[in-house]
Length: 138
Image 1 (spheres, helix red, strand yellow):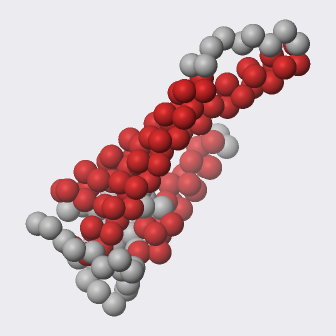
Image 2 (image 1 turned 120 degrees about the horizontal axis):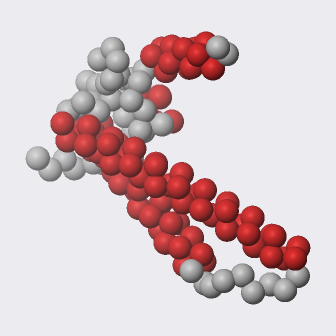
């Protein structure tokens, strides 16, 4: 089913939650975000493959090593985000997008606008974080 999204469309509380317009809006947002991450990753790859460390000065060499480690961490983060974006796109396909994995309640538009890959409602997320804190303190 093709949905035509008005250029200035923003999801609103006045319409049915996760109606076809909202789903298309979030699908496009996720695809744009994914494309941006892939573009950045390509840039990182290019600069990483520009060769070995040829700096003679130990400080320069350490600086290049630090930059490279940071780039690799950034790529790893981007890779994990892309996986989460793919999972969110899959949830759009299956009709589960926008609903809490734990409670089945709507996650809420404001939360999805801020974090389109969210899988938990704020309440469920806070519960998880409390549990993690409790177990971390053991």
